[in-house]
Length: 358
Image (tube, rainbow, N blue to C red; front, side, top):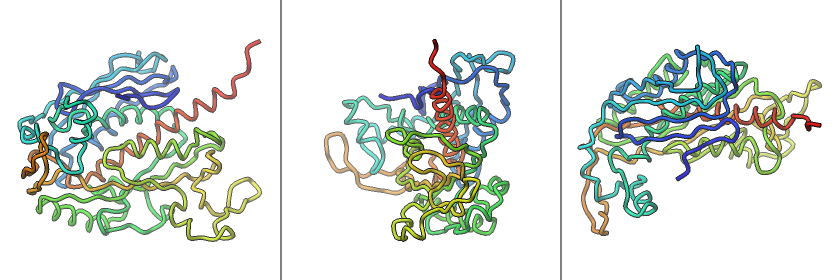
């Protein structure tokens, strides 16, 4: 099982949704960085369950404890070990799927890959609870890159869309409502819609948009380590993600080159930014912007037909506490994974410039 992400700035994680704890080890963090622990915890608070009426009601404080790699508030350059204790497991809620599989969930594929050895409690290792580890690493990555601004927001839930360009939005308003949409009127529509979906025992998907600003030109490689490919991998790693596009994305496929080309200003910036801040796999100094599509959560509080381990058709209905829509809680996860990629690529770029030792 692959449990690590990144090359020079690398996070390796452990733990299951209903085990005693989750946690990880961060390698490659430079020494001497004074960490803002309140900022790290705030990122976890943005992700944690039970924070509003439109998310899962599992109550977890998600308080991180650092075990190594930090002394007197500063990073030492050694591995940063951390742990987040699980405190509110209700494993009995999952006994009904011990021998059956939730449709469109990872239950079946995990069971097949690991020859029937599956922790079915809350999804075990496949649970999105794992992403709390990524948020810790991403929060530290953000502090490695203090001049880069990373802002994600809800741009769609179900059929309700925010169609305004990000340049017109105030990112300070993202945290002003529980939908994490920077348009108050659209946010209210989203909240009402998710509330209704929840009453029906159903779920709904959505889209998160993310903008990376002040990224220096030169990050990424032109062949196999393209920056947009790494961002795509990072986003597609997040549970429930079904799509990723950056820059003009699929809309660009319908344009003519004469309209799509980003013409230069004399300072090297461009008049337009259909490229999305990346050309030839390398950042060009313009804003990097992308969208991430999330499918509806697979666990429904409705009756569905499925199969058991013997291949028999059985009826099942989800139990326990589940998100009717993952999008609002996924905002800090998207930001965290983007930050990890940028920190890693910044270090790779610095390593490339090291002179040969004579």
